[in-house]
Length: 181
Image (tube, rainbow, N blue to C red; front, side):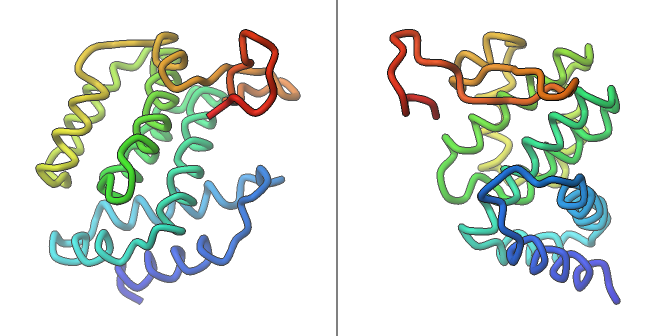
């Protein structure tokens, strides 16, 4: 099985997985990690073909799993998960609604801030895989460090769930329901 075939197989599995609720195991983000590591090693033409095959439904699942990967980075203190998170956005290429990417990238930036990692350094190592479009949009997010300000921009808060950090919608300052992103 080629790397492209393996990525497509994993993407089919992710597409068929319900992510309506937070996964009970780490299996989905482990699948994501495998797919992103294989994708990163693909020849340019195959990487482009994989990028073009991403549907809107898969895009949102990948971005959600990418946010869980950012949580994993913060919880395990393993910065390699940040690379996985960013690879999702490089591969997905901001193709449906860049604002959705921005919200998730701000979470990744916060995780990097908690780890003491300069996320711009990680982004720069991925530039050879980026389209011009992605490069411009990444610059809009990571042009200066934000840390906790990034969470406010994304309307997110950090909660402790059984000893692990999780991103959650920020509470409405007026106490209304349904105002979170």
